[in-house]
Length: 425
Image: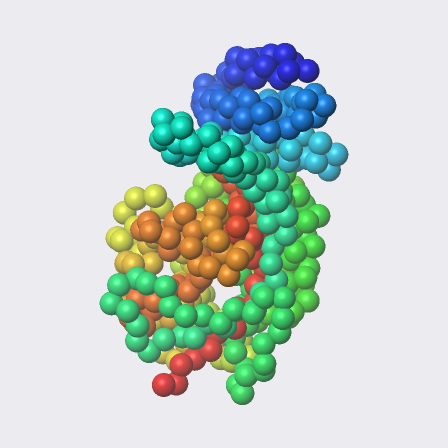
């Protein structure tokens, strides 16, 4: 069985990129090769470490688990040569185990490199007892990846109360927000504006059609005033499955004239734009591409400005849109902006609330444990939650799906109701 694992590693590194190159081209072949080169050396190293931890009678089982993970990862990557949404059996037998194995192996490789200097120092100093204890921490990368299947599969139900500001920090900075998870807050004296934001659903292996339908159904049952979709609807599989997004967004039909959407960066991928447009149009959602609209709500008129995604020239793009769509007196003004990085370019006082996604909440962090820290916390990206810049407010939704790194670790998806509260102080 051990020889089978090693053989599968070698075959995956060679055959999957060659197969991808022949049938889909160099770009995807390079992508598949990079994924395998990042993950499989870590898998081999972690397998070697775990052989030292388990009893001899369990080593065959360990070999089988690593062989299965390698095979699942290779088959999943090979299946993306002809991408499409797969049946549940394939997702749970191949795609999800394969992606978890890739994530765990990549984390394991990084983990071993980080601990290598410490191990070298302990070995040089003859600290054999410390080395013996330290070897057990190598369980963590795979344990974290397995536990994170739950984090990746289930968005957290929340009510988030956003206080619209009169003033705030001189630079973009996180500001306090009321967040109620799995519980209902006390009612407010005055009715807030109630918004459901759908961010980064990424229809794919972790977010099949029925799951996204069910999520939207639950959110619609809360009877929001507005449903605002901030982009990135698909993955490779979703883009190549005609009609899937139309079906997944079907629950939005119960709210005509209350649903508005923008494109995200992945919605501009080849083949995605037409599918996204079809899914939005068929379900009565209005797509805003660098334009605005006004909608009457139970708390008064709301002006919604939708910015298309651009990778460059964000400042000029945002300023141009806002000048073209000037603020309307006595209206709450909301900007839909897929990438929160552009928020700093919004003139102070010009927009009450900007809604963004894109970051997946940071995707790796300590949010599950009640802390705001994520891997993006010290970067230029606002990662999740509420930020202020003067009187401007930005809410970055953690999203319900993800794309790229194949797990959410410590950062659950979000299924929230936003309650906008005007600050009279």
